[in-house]
Image (cartoon, rainbow, N blue to C red; front, side, top):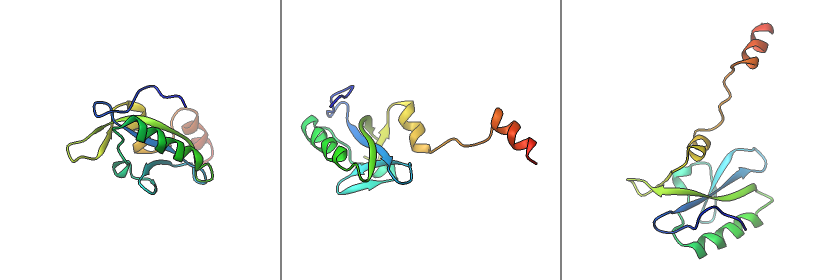
Length: 109
């Protein structure tokens, strides 16, 4: 199991993956998965995070590509992303038309 950091109180983590059926980003919480990243379980202990990640990996009938993502505890105690990639994943897909997509859409009018 590869990870780029060790979860701790100084560098907590969440477990994130993609929903196997819909492809949406999901975050692990105690007892399942949520589409709301603010509800994710925040792991501050390496051993517990490793066990949870193994559990996530075993749920290959529900999710694909689970991994530990560095997070921080926000002012309300809920997890917040520390990396732009995770902040982007929280906002959802950027599926507005631009470039070739906009030209194709304009030609189909």
